[in-house]
Length: 513
Image (tube, rainbow, N blue to C red; front, top):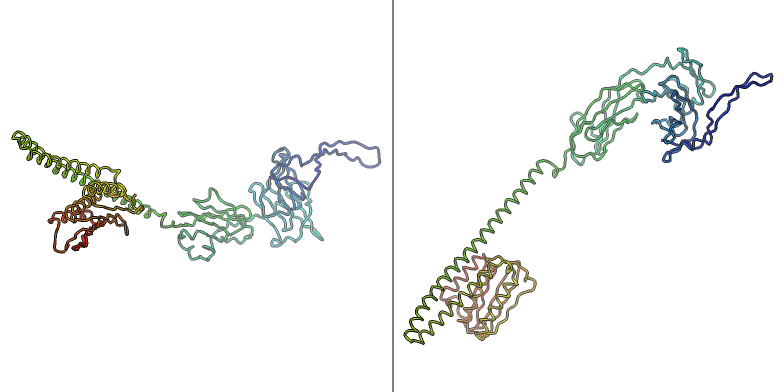
């Protein structure tokens, strides 16, 4: 839609008033004009129409307007909102215009004579290649009737030409369109035209050059194209034979093209198949592999969780068995000692009774300790090294305090939040208890140092005493059972156990997991 600018006034006849004058001159009709400003008909968002050259009227009270800069315009005076419609054309500088019938306009321009078919919305140029003299311009003049002898004339510098629009021969040659050149990423790739075009996802910049194979007015042949999967309708490329598509997505496409001659006769559409292959990460087989991969991860994770659950269950079952065996046998001993104590009381054997009661006290203490250890191991909130360290510290304080042995215990701050499994906590603490018991029973020491450290993602427990020591290569101070149990528990955690001792040099116990 356009607005008319540059013309301040347009005079449209309002009425014709015939009056006679008393003179010797012939009667001249007086024409009264009503002034109308086109500025009031402009659309707010329209672009300006400048240099209006000529105008013709239609039966529906609309007008065809030629301009020198805006091409051909159709003017609807009654449409106050959008009165102007621009007719798409490559010819922008137009001059005189004449309407020879309801479907044809003839226009003079610097390019030559232009015929515009209103019904088909097509332009056809007649220039020097058709025998037309150059530099035709100005306005048309014509005979006064639309008869078979209707003559239209247009002038040029030094003369004029005349023609009968009825006698102009139409172009009846039907084009035969082909793609004659192909560029992929601006690289000539004509060989791809002999088979369906197949390209990688990063070769999605294509240019096609079309040929109409038309020998009559070939330069006025227009082209239309349609890429199925991309375009919603046919695109009009006018007389430009070059088609460009950029950044085509992966997929199968069909390019359809057709040519239209200067009189509107269309060629049969032809088709070319184009396949843009997706990147590997967007292919079906990749999606399948990813589905298998994700499914495998889920499956293995599920199996891992099942194995972890079974391991946890096994640890719990083992703790339950140990509690059952230890507490059961201890309670049985307490029951037996109680019966013996009752018997000895009846015999007034106070010394024997006192010894039996001491055994009962010791056995009940063992039950309390083992039950406390089992509850601590099972409780999930105790799964950090910090909880293990606190329990170890409390245990050492209670035993070394009674034995009169000084001790130090330290743990690196950065490993306090490290988590241990239930099995690791249980075995590590039991090895620690065994080592403490052995120190109290055999080391005859004054000082014990306990350290919890971490090296290369491995937790190390080191217990050092300054006792009498022994030859660790030949002497087993634990009568075999203590050392065997400690080694077995280290192996159960897939860790390493070592004991270093020399006579008079003390003993070092290390366990690494």
